[in-house]
Image (cartoon, rainbow over all chains, first blue to last red):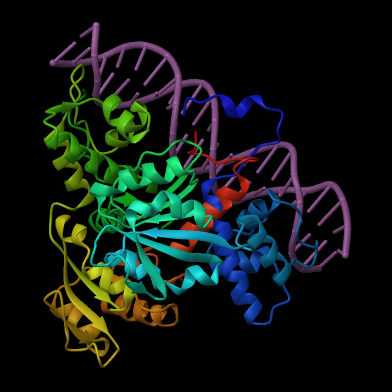
Length: 227
Length: 227
DNA sequence: AATTGTGAAATTGTTCACAGCA
DNA sequence: TGCTGTGAACAATTTCACAATT
């Protein structure tokens, strides 16, 4: 965090916290529910109640991006949902590649939610000769050696890494060298990527460890976010 | 250091942030690496460098739980790793049940890392008659109807939910009613549980949405945690 | 000399409270 | 009246800076 390049320019760079972005995803899902329940408008109070947040939090989060509500009335459900989709960038199609067709990779390839949100998985790679050429849910598994060309050819913007920890950094390096700017990593390892590449790591063991910590300490530790 | 202060007061309710707990998991992994590389001691500076954190952060996190280092020298690698394992509660065996033997559930059942950290998966449940009775990695898949009795019988402390969103709340309710205090949820839904039950939800679509947001906004938004 | 442990300061994130508008 | 949008107040978290210790 020693780079000073961000503060110099006259560009209006706003600082949005990770939690705010996370909550936008949450609002998006709740708005879809409210919409399906027939609500044309929703107040910050109602939205907050359903997600165990405060109304002020909801309004503050949204205010970073504009004024979407009507005083006295609330927010128009469908419009706000659409606006958040636009802020999150999920109102467009993203081209996604999956590297690693093992247990987790296969599960991800079959995960319906991705397609629903506009994430189109159109390439799968593996290094296992027995898998290469075979078909997984209509997608042919390609040789991992063809990764650089294939990423370019299919205009891949997001790569999901689901290979063993020992190979993950190598794959990440290839992706970065090819110009990929977003990686979702399922390997239980802390990948090193340049600061202009966004990396999210889902480490299931770490989630279990959090639960373990809580079970051990809930009687003498006050964990924020738990009543 | 002042005389032993961590265990003497009658009301030791400390407030530990979620981020601190998360980082303890990170330190634990890095200490295992340092140990395997033959380091007998490690400084907060080195640990911080390897995880892109600050030395002060490392020291502060550890100081919430005690004084584990030696001034001028650093921390004893193996001892600190062991101490963190104890804080996280992963130096004991946890009994884990998995509900849902679909794509994600099957992948989780095969996930080697869990067993390595002392999370013993010894029960799998599903509602699909074709799966019930079959064997998955040596574990027989049981009828979901037997969940309450089985949770008690096997002394399950942690339940992993990997069923479709539409069934997840029902399963969570059963677990809560049976006395489960920790749930790891993979269903893309905001489960409601009492405040004495700790819930972690892994929502892969939300991780993708974060990447999407970043790709769309990286030129005019300053996201904390990105240099 | 090197490094921990920790109050104090700085920064970041959340909630309050109210002006302003439908 | 009801509810948004937002600056100010407050709270939590991180970083600084330095005394204490080996």
